[in-house]
Image (tube, rainbow over all chains, first blue to last red; front, side, top):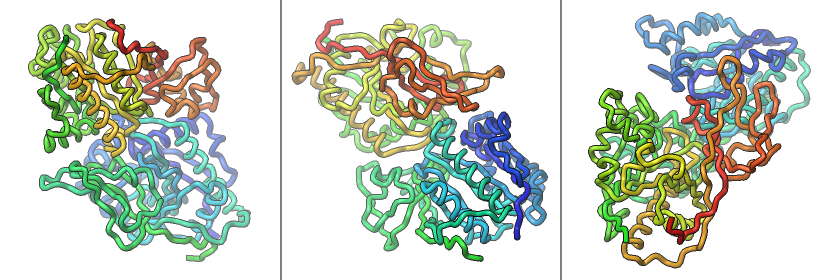
Length: 299
Length: 299
């Protein structure tokens, strides 16, 4: 059976997402809080310069730089492109990773609660989803593992043999909330416990299946003829991440006070609703569909 | 009786506080929404370069530059120091203001709801407080008008003959929430209605007195020996702006998981709790005391 020995816990991939950054500081003072008998755990502050500047990034989003073609292109030399290559030296190449497991800690301004984001496929992730839901039912599990191959994935969390993202919100950028940090710490603890139990083949009885949300598409905010935002997310949708959005539900309101309704036939489950970090790309939210994870599935 | 004829509505004094900025855009398309018969209304985007950069400011906080000694010092030449002088040309000097009333629109990441911030003294503000509470009881009224003289005040809102700040939250920086924008638009409308009725001496019967919160002090987050944050605001206090904080209530939690209690003898009413914009100064919150405004008082 697969064994997970080495774990890298990464915080500050985005410099203004403070929970992971301050948890790293906490765990450096108190390594016993993340220690597990079968695991060798390292921590890494991914983007120290962006943290210093209280910015998501200086030149480019670091968490979009981990595609193999980008990592092997020496002409891409801005700060985050360089930092990604430096991190890949530490974490290893995707074909020969130095770590069995990479856990990347993120915050969102959206009301997503504690989330486990699965970005690769393996039976172990199904078991992890079952374990996490058993221990912390309020966790939302998001799947985005069947859209891209490993080499094509730009996420830092794909630099380990295995890897997941922990995403917790709502928290404003450059701000540290006790409740959000606590959720992140608790969820991280359950993931480490899972790995420990998995290594010892001592997992408890898990639910046969758990609910998850599978990524469908990103949605742009309505723009005017000058390419400027013409509307904002409607207050009936705001904060309702992972809740159903049905045809005819209010989705936006324009600055002319006109309500724009969701027109899709499929009921969807938005997340990253009104995320501040996506304003530069005019994204309003992501849409997901509800799916079931068979916890003991072998695929 | 005092008459208010000219009104300047200012948004984007902080470039990442989006409600006022987008309301200005909206009102430029729909000037009828802020038009009042007795008022001549102008709008101003105060810090366009900070808005472009989605930052509070480029070089220095613009809303700390409007002290008379700073405005008259030609050696202070960074972007916001220059922009403040440019704005003072438009709004006029404090002794000879071009506008009877300046309304400065702000957002906070703190859970302060819709707030009216009074920063100068005059019987008209007492009447305004009474009118606003009559029309919109959820408004919190904050007073900070007896700590500084007019010339010593660094706020843009002190650049008119009269002026107030509208402060609405919680909203992450660089994010636009429908509910928050709606609160700001509604509160601004009530203030303009008040000025109109005041000019015509047609105010309705107002409550004799209203509750308000008078600024006492700013409080720093606990720091470690390296000057770094050693704690965060406790979750029991987070989001409880304008609620009583009593001796023995949890105030912070350290990264060693120790709860720090409020030790003051006086029950206080914190606001700007965990405001993201104040992290660079390590401020955790402001403390206020509850006071009563006599609506028909002549002082």
